[in-house]
Amino acid sequence: NKELLNIENLAIHYITDDGTVKAVNGINIKLNKGETLGLVGETGAGKTTTALGIMRLVPNPPGEIMSGVIEFEGRDLLKISEEEMRKIRGNKISMIFQDPMTSLNPVMTVGEQIAEVIEIHQNVSKQEAMEKAGEMLELVGIPKARLNDYPHQFSGGMKQRVIIAIALACNPQLLIADEPTTALDVTIQAQVLDLMNNLKNEFNTAMILITHDLGVVAEVCDKVAIMYAGEIVETASLEQLFENPKHPYTVGLFGSIPKLDEEVDRLKPIKGLMPDPTNLPSGCKFHPRCPYAKDICTKKEPKVTELENGHKVKCLIYEGLVDVKEVK
Ligand code: SF4
Image (cartoon, rainbow, N blue to C red; front, side, top):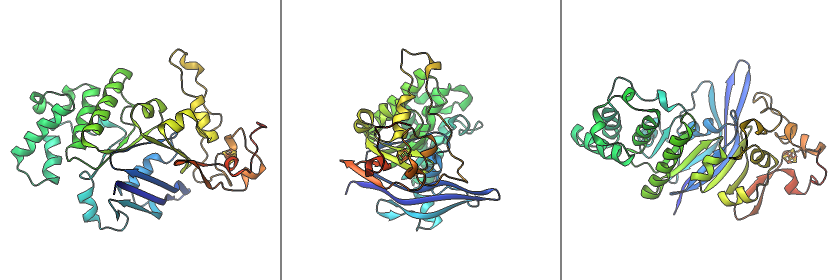
């Protein structure tokens, strides 16, 4: 059985005095061992909340998992005890958070920080943990002689490598990386992506890479899920998505990728803003921004239509209910 993760109908809301923020609204994700999924969308699409849900780290209150199943290695993570979950977190599933620069402890050496994770999850002595920490550091391309250095002695890119070393120290089955390269400059970004590719090939670690950058997706991912307003609107293999994007939102995202030879100010963002998550539009949640939207789109929620080989899209065009010839 190659299936590692199976998320069904997951919904996560934040219940606040100002209303209910519907961050994630019934998503399905399947991931096999060793596979890399890109979870793509704009800020506020629900990507990070999805990741926190898988880790069972959604702050409660105000966050609440309203429905769903998160099966990992055949067990529903939403049904196990907090103690069992603690054994999985940082061990079988680890996560690299959005702001790597602040997630290292400034008063501990990087060696101590990597070794600490190994000690917590594996039954080894301090010395063995430190040896393994040295190996991890070498693995991410930093000489082990630097085990005793402090984070401030490292550059941004190297700090990110240290974070990856910590996340991989226990050979996780699943690594969730939330915008792991956003804070880095382009050259270092490429190095970190290379590194992640190598690690994936070497350890067969499955990854969920959260990003708003389709360029990053093209470098690392096998398949892609496009999120909009807490829903997955399109799921496809990397090839399917790049050669034949189907959902009007995905098509719009491709329209806004800057070409290498173009000035940045020519970047065309999709017009309009992400809807207010406390007051989502009726029908298709993308209708206020969709160039193909028809009356029916404001009333009827699209179903997920499977086009071919796992290429799925949530849009009324593919249910034959909206004609694409007339663009609004
Ligand atoms: Fe656009 Fe209608 Fe499709 Fe939604 S259902 S993406 S509004 S065409």
